[in-house]
Length: 150
Image (cartoon, rainbow, N blue to C red; front, top):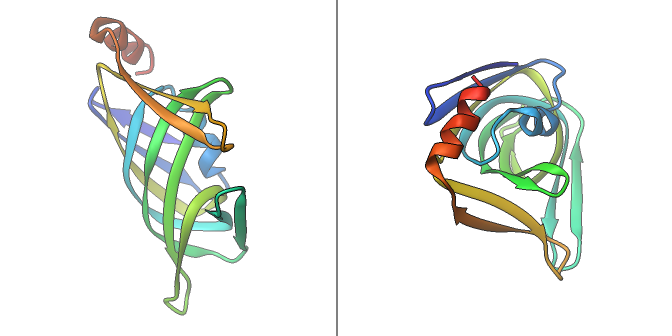
């Protein structure tokens, strides 16, 4: 993983074989918006929430990552990564949904928007989903934490 930040934005590059979701969980950033990503993925698993559970779809072969948006937030288990992806196969057919798992094939380039002064927390709700609970936080405390991550 290559990561660079100016304190307000961050660019992350993952390389072949890295676990996309786990790598984002391990970044030393507690609250961020995933504004976009491109690259290639394989062993992709994504889902569609039907109101009770995720209906999962798997794609083993490499596909182009053509779009990814979401959030990185604090949770009881550490960091929660919630993102949706769009992919396209060799034939140009697009698939998308809630990202459950993926391995980087070749490269993934990810742009993050850091949000000083805003904390993102995810908590389990009665419907089974991890709901997003944003709140204002002490900016000085956030800046101190961000400096530790650089």
